Length: 461
Image (tube, rainbow, N blue to C red; front, side, top):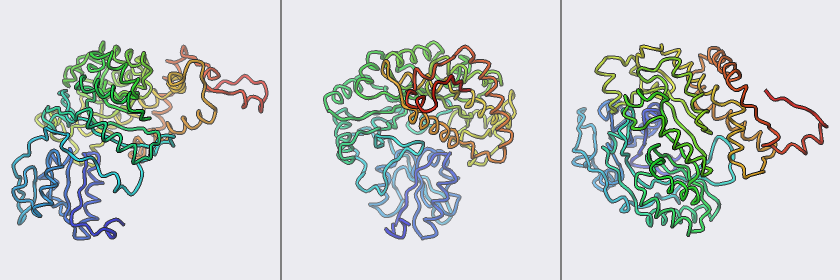
């Protein structure tokens, strides 16, 4: 155990509400070894007092933690350190807030050389090594359900392109120049088009072999089609967009700031540039009917998405969404371990909680059909190219593991109900997709396989 090896004085744990149990479990391990525990991140920032009520939690960092944690270590005590909450003689004390860090270039790069393990993609083995980078903080969006609003108070800040490139070269050196896949943590990657344009110029000149995965807003894509083309050429080729709903009234109710027309336009721009597109949708928002929810995977396929995730609407503490539901006394589950976007925790007039959880499975299964999967693969191929049969099997296995790891195991006691929903979704998908016949031999190289089994006509259902 690392605690035995290093005997630390402090253990810092970053967590969101979805890691509530895991964060407290790690804090308990540290506490049994008489180590001071410090919690930070979205969840602790929202409920510092509640987390400090646990005996294994000593200190909470509210907001950004770099300078707060540094000051705590230097002083050796939490008193008067901006951004800290702590316990003293059984009383919780909240120090004054710390302002957001305006000059992100002033922050040192992560000490990657201290890592004990490599970042791995646990869904499937990749040829590229993985890493992570943060290029900006904050988001100009005002989505009522999002934690970014209270974490950064709408204060969007950026690193300079030159500073970002310095870190990318350091990352490349750390990985010994191997091809990389880097996930960019920025909640709104394209908030400053001028900085992104300059970064693309530097990337194109750098000779680095990096593929980036980013999160961007729909409206940013639509406003900057030329920049999107340049970004894709520079290796920024995978995009996760928050669509959330296929109903404009619901989009307006949650302050999403986009329309269905913008959603379609954003996908068209990305497809034209050969990008990989993933989309997130929220089920169980106020005003959403069962029919609305069942339509989401159909809508996602019609948009042309290659990947889609469907999370149950979760009122995270500190958000406007949480405050509104709290005022109306609609939250019935106070167990933070269920605030994982897999469980229903508040009263929805249109759908009961158990059915809502079943509908999440329905959405996943109805989206992830073989046709959708093959269409996604075909878009990744160069004109006339094909993938091997082994690659097809590996890709299918990765999607199955994704579906498993995405949360089915969190509802193990409902397996029979989940299987029933799975079959319902499969039947509905079959009816819906009869016109979407895909020729698998146009995508998968089958000639070697067919030399073994002989001339055959195969239908895969």
